[in-house]
Image: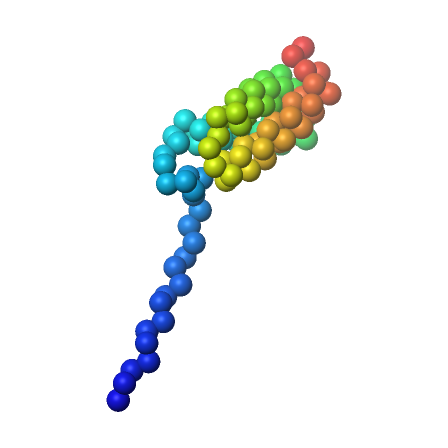
Length: 102
């Protein structure tokens, strides 16, 4: 009795920013900072808690994100960085709307 050929088990897809097979620790760190600073500035800006911290987080997230965007090597990195840049820009705008650096 012959057995049916074994079907390969589907592997779980794992997420990686390094789809080119090389490590990019500096760019990945910059992408993570951009997202975290962007989300924090966006949330603080929506709550209008502390406009100075909101503005600083938004501005630094925006600048770091723009620099990381110029150096990014993969599509996944660029997608994450753009998400962080947009969140940082909106958070920075909300910070400026509530008083900015004053």
